[in-house]
Image 1 (cartoon, rainbow, N blue to C red):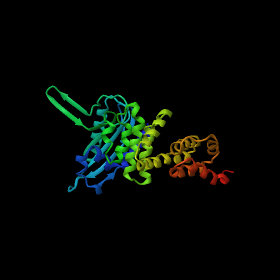
Image 2 (image 1 turned 180 degrees about the horizontal axis):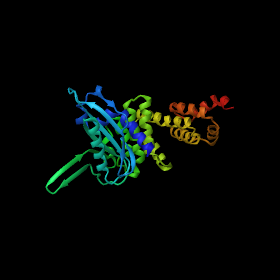
Image 3 (image 1 turned 30 degrees about the horizontal axis):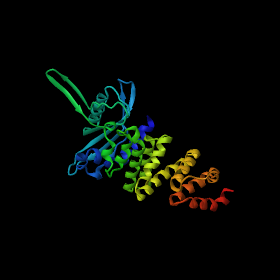
Image 4 (image 1 turned 30 degrees about the vertical axis):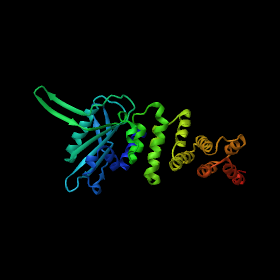
Length: 307
């Protein structure tokens, strides 16, 4: 789970305000945005489980016009856990004791199954007395329909649609829609890579789904097609940087087939001998190709480099 934890923490810390805007607009509207301060990790010994626990994200904020702040505690839970609500109460109690501030607890349930609604309260009571009722905001992604977030101009929506309720046949379409929405946001390159990497991690497609993915891209308007293809091409470049030559070469061939049609065998043979640097250059150049002649001209121009 370390990679999962890292991805979610990076997403929610980078887009903390956007996360609240998407799911808790009534809270974010009261926050003084200049007051946001991310606190260091908190470690707690979980005596019942016999292990240390680390709080995922703890943020100190202040409501506009008020001097006294409060804490926003966000946990991302990637698996169903019995008595998880009790553990959330333990976290709350220790944070409340340590900081003497109000704590707003939020849990993002990110597992694929089960689909049942997860408990979001911890209660201690007797027939004649309710000693405790602790509640937290629960965002259970597999109970949210991705279609409801298609038109939300929000980077967190673009990322988390990949973890929402998706019919198996819709997986390629959802991936395209995540990238289409991301492209409309015009984020800087680092934030674009963060969101697109998140989507690619949680919506890894098989060969058949990849074909449908390309067909879905083809159905987009031309401007959207180009913007989405830029993101897809960036995955190819990243694959090259990570030494994934085979995957990068395969992606270049797929992109070329989509741009200029079926590739003759002699053209494929020329691409097979390209170096990693040349593959990266071709990946950038192909965005401007409109026919096979553009590709063959590019290969001729780079033939001396190949030799």
